[in-house]
Image 1 (cartoon, rainbow, N blue to C red):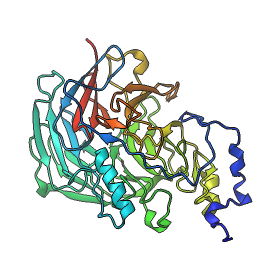
Image 2 (image 1 turned 90 degrees about the horizontal axis):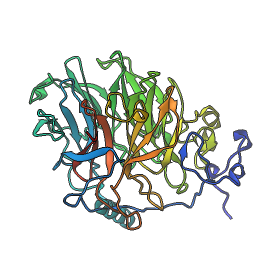
Image 3 (image 1 turned 60 degrees about the horizontal axis):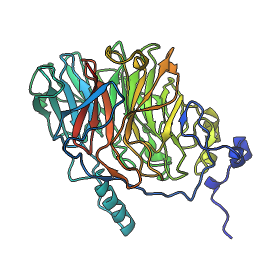
Image 4 (image 1 turned 180 degrees about the vertical axis):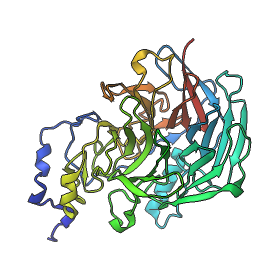
Length: 437
């Protein structure tokens, strides 16, 4: 019998055996989720199937809220940014698959196409939406930039529009209210490592509250380092640079695929939403939101949820297992939690929502049953999560038994008029959720 791989063995130096999980029932959410033992045989591919929204059907919000389409007919809208004048920018882009090399990969690609995850070429553009009359529907639509490379995060600051392409952070001269951007003003500020496992092409960017630093997310190139850690340089990380592109450094790492970024209103701490790894169980590993500690290491790929060792990689770096920080709040395994926004200006929202976090969960593919497919809410008090995760905007998957899906939420922002906007990339629209008047 062949000797087992060293990645499947955990040495005594790790100080924790797989048996430590015995008797612990899985629980997917909260500050202290109970974790089952890792299942190295887990290889679920359970894709949803995108149907599109029937006429007259919208997602469902709690009583006291209304939901309407802010914009329709978009092409895989992923991320949004609100400009100082109230205009909304939306990045339209999607996964671009490599040609399958074998039958198994071809089958997987066809399942992804059926799920609406992949459909044709990426639009690769930024579009401006304007609701000048304030009726909750954008009556103006103007393409500002095309020919981008899978744009995602956007930021306007001091006369510049920053756009996080998959391979670079770019910026362009732009004055809010304008209906065009001159491509000749483009500046390439920061090269970013491109490509990645599944949908890890997304790059986000936000500015520090004082505007002196920018923070850029870069997801991993792999699920759990299976292609070699030399491919993971400057990945699974949040990078920090100055607005001119200099003084680059890794602000925090070991974050498998960080996407949403926002500043918690009370403490001013940077928080992120992170997609965790696949193929070690339906209830491993929980996706999470967490405050981000400068210089912090959050485990990937050697450990998860603090110092729980990943049996595939932990033996490689027991020193990093011992340094792994525990995230703040689990939001469910395989939920693909991407968008993150703290409610600041929602004066019409009930008081319990103010200061809390909204998390857009695009939905699972590596789990039975399905998870995610909703906009979730987590209450906060004194700068920390203060209660259980609650479904807030649902109905994207009307029947979890069939996996048939109308849409998938990705990004969430405030619209500046007391409502939330939520991108739906497979539904090709943006939803607006507002308190009923």
